[in-house]
Image (cartoon, rainbow, N blue to C red; front, side, top):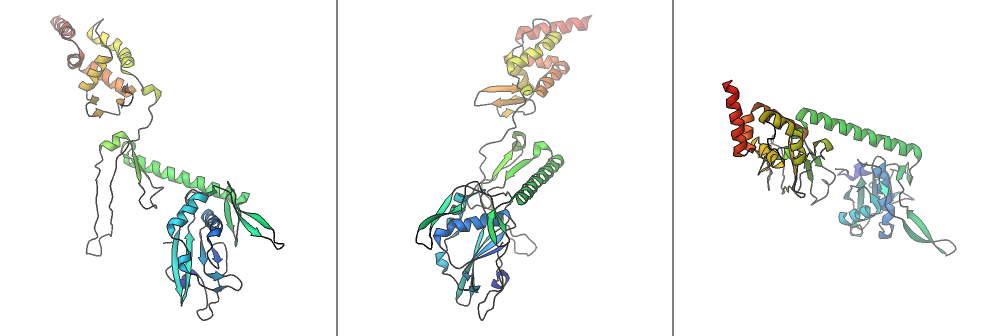
Length: 364
């Protein structure tokens, strides 16, 4: 929660005269009323708050003298309209909170913006309004400028200066580095093949889908619930969780294979051919077709998929790749269990020739 529940915690004022003693500053800005034409001004202030330490726009407070005038709450649009304007004017998306406060028969509306986790927030478009000068001429006034980063200085909004921008970028880089190191520590503790990454960038948006990225190996050990709910227990010690939603497994993200692990069946057969002839005799047939039979015999491939340590299948291209570990595993099994392997991939004549060779060797 960004905003306090009590008006007295929002600003200091006299309940009798409605005189406001709080001043505008780095984290507070007063607006006498709401005007839809000034929306770019409001989003600009919110972006500046997000780029600094957060802040609050308070509608219904006059500036000179500072006193509570109140505002018709219906003049202030709902959160969906605010969100649309913020998305149009700035990126990344700015989170905020709106709350109404009653002071006697007066109503104040406050809009709070927290410091943005992924600052800097950058202006996406140019925006101007027409103002009439003292001589009666109408002139365009620039409100927003594309590419600008707005910052809150004391009681005003201005384009960010070099020292503040340097500090902001350094803070962002430090935060990213700390997050990366924390994730690496989790990977080391849990195991890289058991870790998933949750994209939390849209968790504050109603109806938005949250994505879970896992490796193919990690996905095999997951059980996905189609719909679930945790209900609060009667006893006070139990946590009050309510979770309901549908989990959709649309795509499993697979780390790109190194080029050294992209060995097609034909290439794998060529690499294993010298070993096959050394074990089973010169001229023993061994092609891509035989590689596939050996892989299935060893459990590296099946109708349910492939063991990612040894083999990768690209279903769209109808290609199968054998990794370096996969080739080494086949070589080890050919040496350790030659008879089982040749019975898995060889023709009857090839098997018979090998068995006769083994019998002859045993007879010597």
